Length: 131
Image 1 (cartoon, one colour):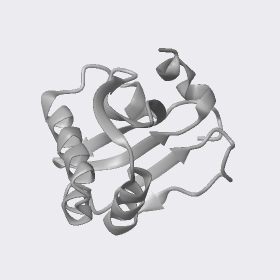
Image 2 (image 1 turned 90 degrees about the vertical axis):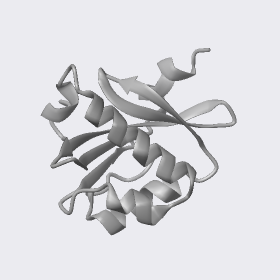
Image 3 (image 1 turned 60 degrees about the vertical axis):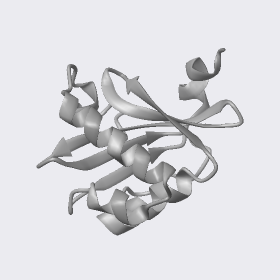
């Protein structure tokens, strides 16, 4: 994503109820600390990209259900998870002590999640924390 554009899947509008349901299932699995349930919702070719806004070194996307599920479980430790629309796509908001620390959305393929996008950049999350 070095050209600064969002990936095509994040620009889509009007994503369906199946996408929302799948994101809700992932959020529930993460709240229940069930890495195995989260892993079962991920496509075998899943990739997760984390946008830290330069706070952490730019990392290659995480790949594979095991690696992505473990990273999501770590990311959601001691957080609240709330369903939300993220740029018009179903997703969820991660917060700690009332401060939004990340937003998550994903693309669905073959009724499984793939291309997970996590934004943790404080600059990009500023409007989530204006309350």
